[in-house]
Length: 419
Image (cartoon, rainbow, N blue to C red; front, top):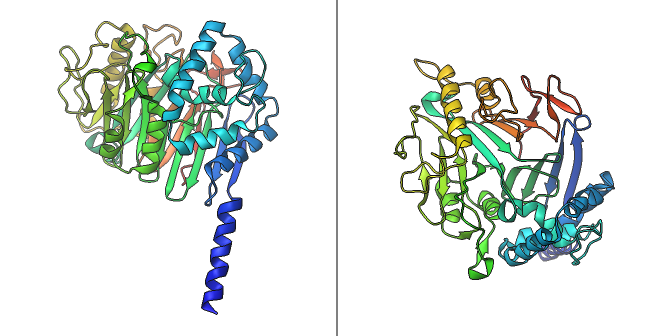
C-alpha cells in the first residue's frame, strides 16, 4: 500500500513538472497615469519558459495595445542606432543567466515579432523585448542618487534608504513579486517589460539599487571580451544570495559595459560597491577614506551620486556640477535632520529625497529630486515598508493628476512588502 501511495505522489509530481502549475496575476493599482502595475508570479515548480508565456498572456490580455506602443519606440531611432543596439544585444544576451533568458523567450512568444528584428514593423521581436531589460547595459545614460542612514542615525536603528531613479523618460512602473521556490524577490521595475534589476529587495532583507558612474570611456568592443549584463547579474545575486559580501563577490570581477555603482543594504548597514571597471571594484562604507575635496561628515550614513568617491578610483565627481551640487544638497539636507541627538525618520528621508530647491527644472538649484526623476523609493527595513513615487511621464506641477505631479507633495504609494 505504501508503495502505491509513493508511486501516486511521484506521478503527481511528474505531472506538475511536465504541465506546470505556475500562476501570474497582473493588476494596475491606482487611477490612469498615477499608479503602477502589480505583478505577482508564483512559480510552483513551473518552468521559466512557461512562466514567461503566462506573464505575456496576462499582460497582453490586460493591455492589448502594449506591443505596438513599445514597438513604436524603435521607429523613433535612426537605422544606425537601431542596428547598433541589436548587434550589442546579440553579443551580450548569451551571458544572461539561462533561467532569465528562458523566461524572456517564453514572454516573447506572446508577441508577434518572433526572431525578426525590424524597427518599423510595429512588432516586438525577442531581441527588441530584451532591449527593455538591457537599456542600462547597452544604451544610456541616466542619473540616480542614494541616501541611507542606519544605526545611531536612524530613528529605528535599522537601515532607512531613499533611492531616486533619474531618467529622461519612463513608462508606467511595475512592482514584481516573484516567488520561485526559495528565491523570493520584489523587483521595482522601470516598465512592465523589464526583467532585470535596478531597484529590488529579497526575503533576506537585502536591498539593492544601481547608479551610473560614467568616466567618458567609449563603449567597449563587445567582440574583444565576454561581456555580461550587470543588471541581470544583480537579479541573479539577489535571488541566490543573502549577504552584502556574497552579492559584491558576484558583481566585482566580470566584464561589464559601463562603470557603475551598486548600493547594497541589509538589516544592519548600507554600503556602495564602486565598480570602476578599470580601477578598484570594492565596497565604500560610511567611514571610508574619500578622495581629496569630498566631505562626508555623517557617521552611520552613506550617500551616492553618479561618481566614484574612493581615492583610488577615477574622479568623475569633481568636474561634474550635477554630481557636486547634488552632493552639496544631500549634505545640507542631512544637516537639517541629523545630529545633536536627532535621528532621521522615514518621513524625513522622504523630505530629503524630494528636495528640489526653488525650481525643479534648474539643475543648479537643489537637484536631489530633479526634472529627470522618474521614481523615488523610501525603504524602511525595520518596518519592512516601501513608499514609492511613480512619475509615469507626468510633468512637474502643483497637483497630483493624470498629467502632472505636485512638486511639493509628490504622490507616494504605500507598496506592500510580502514574499
